[in-house]
Length: 153
Image (cartoon, rainbow, N blue to C red):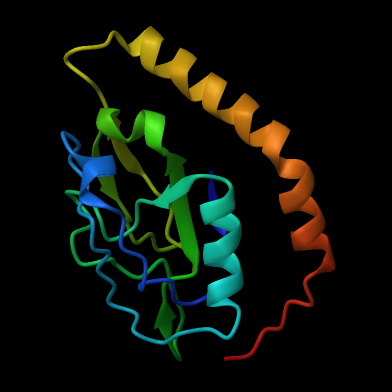
């Protein structure tokens, strides 16, 4: 799952080493954007309830937690990509790439491969994860709908 969450910054999340064992992800999340949005805890709780781990700042290609938005006044990390535990072992690289025609930077390079599993099996696993998330989303959808989101720190 990924997109523009308009929520800076969700750096304070450490994933237990046992979950990440054998993966290419770091348990600590790095970020160049050190500003913390007032709704960061809410977003973190929602992602945690959904069993999702933020990739930004945890992978090769984005070791520093690069900015995902920039204009003439500021730069920030408000776009995130999050995945479930059952696909983290297949993620090898994740990059945020600045482009000239937008103030948001797309995830242009994400390498997903696993020597032990064929690609079709990885996608099948991902589809199962999406289905499981959809089943859990009843409570998440309600929490998101009821939250009074603000565009302020």
